[in-house]
Image (tube, rainbow, N blue to C red; front, side):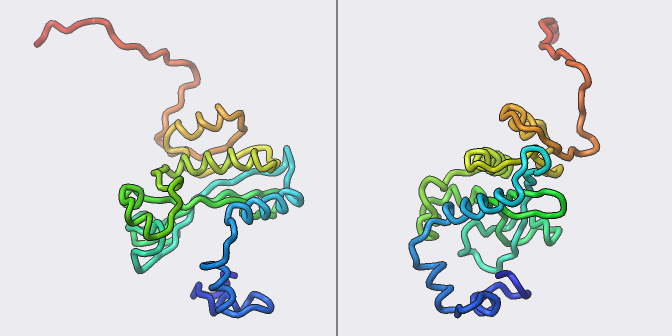
Length: 209
């Protein structure tokens, strides 16, 4: 459905059999359907083909989508990795189930910048559910994807992510607490202790005032 440079209903209708732009627009904007149920259904289907407790993995990464206006949910000036710069757009964190040379998206969480979550009226106008009007970091969204994948019955042996999630210890510690095996990139200046450094707070009081 994402064929072509322009992502609108007319272009989508060109690749969806027996459809037209008006029907697609009605389905996406007015029909009553649960997006989470659809995503989970697709994830379970993918799991039936690719799921494996040893050979499959759950990959986490974000992607940005340039937007010209300010009405799209989550649109703001922020880092868009696809463009390699700060620009106006949306950012979402994705979970992908992969095995061998095959990969299928199984989850997505839209990132809401603080200028959205701090503006209740704006969220109300955009139709954002009240439960989602809470600021979450991209690391927190990624952890939610991992936890939900397990709840949804997805089978994978390990979790993978790039240095955007490995730039601090928090995400890796969270995965370890969840009992996950993981491989996460870290920055070249990230310090790792092979033995417990046993940090302590000095009890010596300075005589200087």
